[in-house]
Amino acid sequence: MTTRFAAPRISFFSLFVALCLASLATPRLVCAQTGLDLGASSFQFLKLSLSPRVDAMGGAGAALAGGPSEAEINPAVVAGQKGALALGQEYPPKEFGTRASSIGWSLPWDGRRVLLHARYLGFDAIPGWNADNNATTAYGAHTLKLQAGLAGQNYGFDWGGSAAYARNNIADASYSALLANAGVRHDVSVGFLPGSLSLGGAVDNAALWAGKTQETGETLELPTIWRAGVGYTRDLKPGSRVIVAVDARKTDKEDLVFPVGVEYRMLEALQLRAGYPVGDPDNGFALGVGLKWSRFAFNYAYKNHSTLSGGHSWTLEIGDL
Image (cartoon, rainbow, N blue to C red; front, top):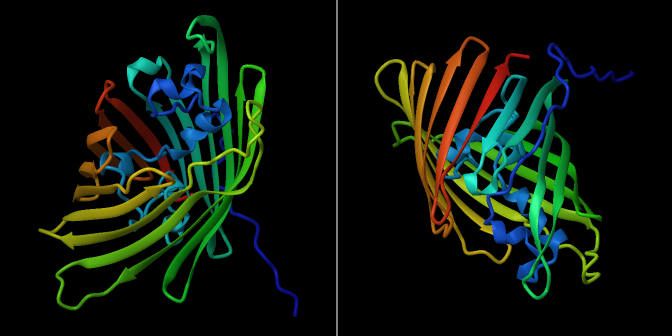
């Protein structure tokens, strides 16, 4: 008997229009005066979340079901969801003088979900500095990440994985890497709780291959991120519910961070969110809102920063594709 695989069902088409995804790392990371390899430091943009929902909840979300934007945090979160397309824009602290865009797409395929993501950041006039801390000619920096993966459900678990190509162009130098993301998620029934629990874990930006820096010839160090989280959902009065999420996040040599967030939903049409990344020395409290009507959803987040002005972001999601 011949097994047939259905092609991905596409009921909506959109070109990859992602432009300019900006880093939330402090500006000194992209300046030569720090002594850091530009190729390694510019890959810090891989730490960015594409999801205003996750941002507004302080960075927590490894265990929560979500759309294509949240799949960048944990590719398993879309396994049980309908197909969707998310277009996003991010406005980092004004000190960067730039903005960011991204696209995420989840396509139904034979009971699974095909994941597609693209992000691009660009700076056209970064101030240059030489080894003597003297100003030089300004230069440009552009980074691109293209990602594709698959998510599904087996034995009561949601799972997902993806592979990505990342490339940085800084002045006349270029740097490339191949990456992998993988995650799992599981809903848990606890008899004595009035609500429901979910557990999730993921690893992001694991290096499959990385090029060498042109400054030292050493292999690029990528910001691999390990996440584990728990989510708690409880229905309140009819038409409303509250969701609480707590994650543990570890990025390479950085300290362990514990993002904590809460979301209050009213009739599924309005979501209010707040969060705080406990232990994060750079990012502070966050607030956000979500609106949903028919197939369309809009999400917005504001994030405070300890030393820079705050940043904000939004996504427009089209569901039921």
